[in-house]
Length: 589
Image 1: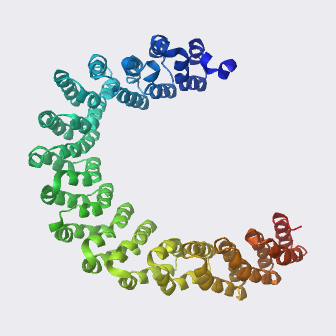
Image 2 (image 1 turned 180 degrees about the vertical axis):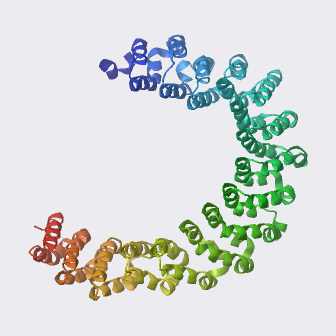
Image 3 (image 1 turned 180 degrees about the horizontal axis):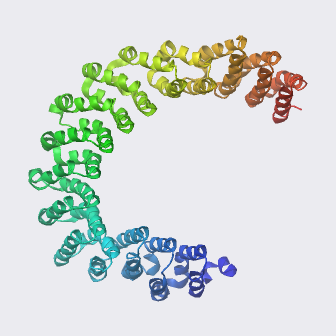
């Protein structure tokens, strides 16, 4: 084995056979992963006559090894001599497509689909289609499920008599006794429909779709919904109502919530497929029902689609439909009992303002935003705050500040510290959306007030918030607005507030840069080294260690070093420890 490692071209098939019989799975896996190297060494002739038959006949292995093999064979065409000989790859892939483990079968089908493109039309009929038929009529359901994924890749390139045969086999699988096979057929129905001639879509596919959409298994019905959306895109407008709408309407009211969920999830695609008229007559009532569904998962999936659904409504009646049919449901969902539903709605509701315009937003939407901004679920609040910019565009900052800002300020001063904490985390986002002037006027004082909050977690978050604000608004803004206020706290009578000054300096030094740190912040830190409280003094040592890398070497030597040396002789053990640590980290000894 060691010798073989050195020169892959000498890797004989005997060694491969030994390794594939080795008890160690990892060794077997490694040798499968080297298959292309082995095939190169053997040459195309021996690969076809020795390697492939060996792989077909001898490999009954761990799923990992089979998975690797199924993947490798998908890119083996060149190694067997090109498209002319590609059919030699079919036997090993056929046996892999029948194994019990789903991921291996799926990978084998993926490789078969890939190499089907490299078959000539003649080879497809002689070699590939018989393989599909064998799989489709196999005794085990595993081979029949694999067959479902192969019809659409060979259908377009074969003669009409073979096409008829393929359609017949597909029909048979759609009514197979085993639910797993019907499920596989339902999942490929839409894809197969896309390669069929329109007449056959109507005569063959529609009855299959109708049957699968009323299957006794909900897992089959929900996959039929997805197929229905694909089929709807293929049909002319006049056929939609007659051929698919009744089935889709029935799916939207299915007794299983999973099927209704699938309808809600695919609603935008369905809306595009059926066009404006059917949307108005059929989809609007169906969408209303989904928004009012008794299952939270369905309501959440529908709520997620509110924005896209409204955007794609026909322009001439969009506003009327939203105001009459959709908004009443949205109003109910704002106070839904399920937080996932409220959260899904909060992520899209703001964008309705761009569709409905200023007056409707002020009258109908702002009250809803206010309710959500005060929701006890943090994700709901975050989703509202994250999307304030689209409302800002429609109604302007003045109106926005009059309506929503008081609610934000109220949350910022909430008695529960976790609520205050949540708002602090949104502040940089809010600042970015509202702009620097507005921020300075309305929110700056809040951010400074948090620095002296009685809860440490709030003071810590407020410090981090300042750093993010400086990253957004720049060092000049920091120097004029933030830094003087922070440094002013160094003289506060409460030692905790003096320590907050040091924490802020640690955070701000990086984003403010050398000049502001040296000129404005360093003198304050040095002055605090004589504080009466030992906790403040040892935090001075830590701050000097933190801001040291930002300072130039002359400031370090002339100003920082003497102060640290003095602190290193402090009576307090902790002060001494941190001063000595700073001296060694900054290499000032």
